[in-house]
Image (cartoon, rainbow, N blue to C red; front, side):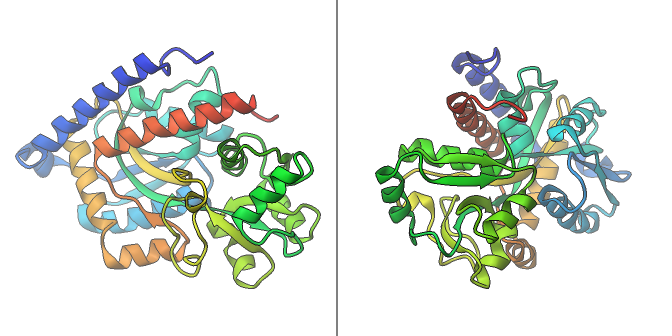
Length: 337
């Protein structure tokens, strides 16, 4: 059963509300003397609901450094880790809606959690105003060199010929690695056994050792062993190819049309934040994400810049909730099992 607030009708109502508010922000941004003149008058805080060093933190810091120059104010990265990103995101929800505390929303906190956690204390499209996506982080379907399939088509053929005999590793139930692989299995109609680990590190170690043969891992994590030949890459999860040196890896969508999944990080403001400020932040971030040097730094980290308007980001979040909700329900995934 779908939770109230995420069924088809309320979701459309929620989306229309967010899109209308975002449209109003975009329409008034050019003439808003208030937002231009008075904001930001002091440091701006980015709440990152994960520890330092994770992808969301890395890209928040990269963006914050550049925005500090644009805004002539310090951008403080406030890591509030733990609890699948829930406490940090709830903290961002409760912040004053004045534009000085913004939250980094991710594929996990905004996309997966609304279905994975029945009592989630926030709703991404009600308690927040989407500002813009920042990056897409492709996952890569990788295999140990001894695995007999060398392409995605060969893997699909092998899995269909031997249902239930192949297995894959993940960082644990409900993680991006797990759910992206389950989405692939659903779309391809495959029976491949899930072998959960307590974190991506142990899973990758066993994959490199040949104890398991398959894994869907983040591009940044899998990059080095792919380049040096310790793993072979079968496909990436984004609709477009990744940046070099992973640009030779075909997307899953080349074999399964329409497939598109990735980790991502974006910015959101507490509900009731002045729309002029939402529009200003979105405009400034989008401009930076099109800057040649910024694009280079993002692609160096095996990610793809993903600038978009508040409208586009709201629509994207809605689709993510729907996609991962389908996977969570179909697989019966529960937190930690």
